[in-house]
Image 1 (cartoon, rainbow, N blue to C red):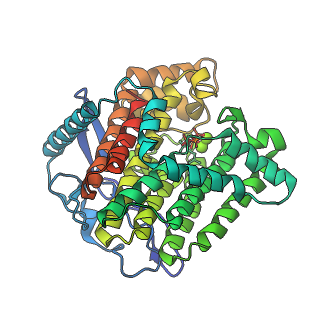
Image 2: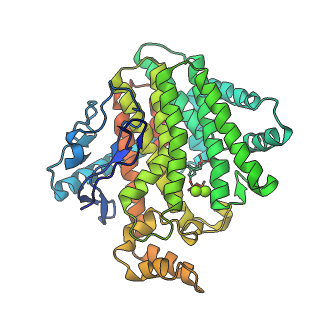
Image 3: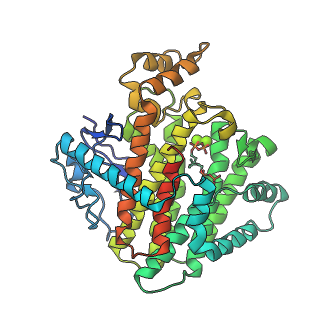
Length: 443
Ligand code: IPE
Ligand code: IPE
Ligand code: MG
Ligand code: MG
């Protein structure tokens, strides 16, 4: 029995718990027939609701549990989340069906075998022009400030990440415009896309300080080049710049949504820092943390794109759900790769998450079955010779990687389902392929 927790509250008692959880955990069968323990429900909570009383917030009866069920209704008509009362076996069967559907979808897309880069350029093809506009905008965004700050920010933008977040925002923008028979995105959509990349970049600068990481985007990190003080200020500067651009969008709903993301990022990083070597960490806590760190930004930007397309509440909510589940899959995959990729592929030592006490999905999902793994993490804190290797080996042997892959695929599947509302168009296909792109990295 996992007790529900008000994740946080802001202001005059308004709750903004993100992923409401309640009692119990369901067993969901994965591809290899492995049974993995999953949170009974993962509810993309209305995180964007602060004082917007028109939205559904807490106090609803879902503490009894909602989880994936094809017939369910999460209040926005997409049928992704269901009410409780479904047996574990039924859940497992449904999840298996969902997984098979996902596999067949991926097959239809014929993207298997293509490199990640190829897939990404296919995804981008319907919005090349818009992506170019946002990239040009980003170059000028830093402005004339202190040369050191400008140098630090420039360094990052030039190094160039994959720009996945602006891409998602623009794809949602264009696809939702098509719901209303409109072909082009607005200048607000482009600005929104730029803002998402700025916030993401700022969060990476701070994350690398916290994780003491030397390399990012194939380059030395800001803190390793300029020192921690400059890195903290450079991150703050980018957050502040993004707030300025955000305010200039003149849309209160979007301002609330996106400003929440910045607070969520800090929340997630603090949750992570305060749970190092905590062997009692649950999957639910891990998913909460991952939502705050990573999924919140993607979810909020998808919803914001729908806001600027004048979508209905149901459509906005589904776009939020898409971003939320895609973001969770993204973080789970990133955490798996920390175990499975080589130092060369990662650009940092393999197993660094575990070594630093950051216990992620592959380890969490096997902790109960391995007293030795618990001991290594809890008592030894991986200090003794060979203990990291032993712990990594245990995660592999006990099937932690496969279980975490199942969890990532499950969220990928949920993300796909939220897209049903969109009209058939190439942007929708790209959003579907984006799920493939994320999951492809672990296939
Ligand atoms: C890295 O995100 C941080 C995580 C959320 C895991 P990306 O992999 O999108 O980073 P860039 O922007 O391409 O460098
Ligand atoms: C994700 O956390 C980073 C942010 C959301 C800022 P990680 O620490 O897992 O990401 P990487 O591995 O450094 O990219
Ligand atoms: Mg990191
Ligand atoms: Mg980190």
